[in-house]
Image (cartoon, rainbow, N blue to C red; front, side, top):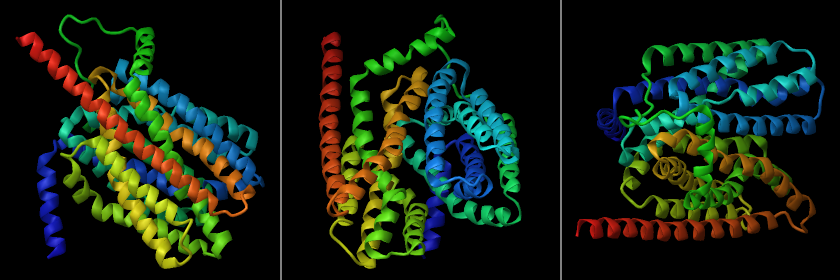
Length: 419
């Protein structure tokens, strides 16, 4: 009965969305699969081939993250100027070339340079996110982004298994396979996905490239959007612990095995695959900023629990609570970026919002590491995480009130004009 009901839900969902969106979903799965089979083995490849330590690996990842952020800013502007499709295809081809180069190079210094270039040319993210916003009406965007999250998690479940098989034969085979997948996806985008960039109003002159980049000034003047981004950075400082410090904390404080930690993450991914659809459908008509606050409450409870519990059962319960928060926050956050942005500036808004993810993963592990290494008790980290979670929750509630006031002011002004 459960699976029959799920199939009926799938049929209902399928007909609610345009075919182009489903083609984008399928292509995204193939693209994510290519990354998922390579990324988990990146550190293993670097340390074994170049005989370097994890500090150098960490520096490489940090440089790639910063370069990717710059690439995202470039991609956001170019997406709004030239269109979504061209930028996605360029990014995929550039990714495939850099992937093969990283697999062939024998010098870590050259590998470092290639990784930085790969980050700078990784410009397709804002175009992909803007395309989803272009294809779907506002009331369907949260669930649309939720569907893409399910696809991403499916690729994470499948990809590492394929990657492990390929890595056992040759690490070069991993890089070549990733490159082939990127070229395949570029061909699918070229042949199946139409350009979705909104047309300029009749008589309106198209922006020059300089004007397009200058449009970022408008983004930074949108104080409510900037407030949303800053509060989301606090949210990211809470969430990033799941994939960074949590495993180390459980191992060092409770002798919790890496296998057990892997099971916690697998449970997280499986819950997203099974439950993301019904949860997003249930909340899609509710106030998005209130949903962000609700998800943040769950994050705060779940992560803070690790400062108080000490058994496997409660570790798992905390992860369940965190995952429910994640299933609320992730799709709603993306739909809110589309809500804030004018339709001709979606790429730039998506690019700037990327800062809210890059900053926590660049600074969070370092700050958390300092706390864990210097605090009298490592549990202090989770108490601080709880405080940050409360601040982020209050921030989202404040933003909800401000947006309500803005809507009322606009409605009042329209009424006055009519009278």
